Length: 108
Image (tube, rainbow, N blue to C red):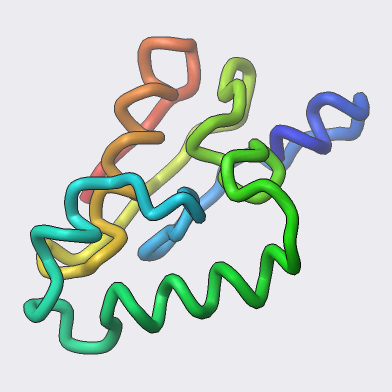
């Protein structure tokens, strides 16, 4: 949505993101604190997915890791994630940044 906004394209009325993985640097604390608790993923597997997806590109690029993107002016977001997920902070951090920048957010 940020790339579409920057290109002057129309935005949707809102977006729902379920268990978003938006930090391919794996910088969120939950990537460490939820290791062994997440019922599906391990940090090692997530790192392997990131490496394959990035194909040598910068993991901190906002197009790869929207947690680093400018979220101003985006449509309302509904962000949902489970409390035991490795990327839990990937849901919490963008929602926390978007609200103060004028993007309506709701965490459930």
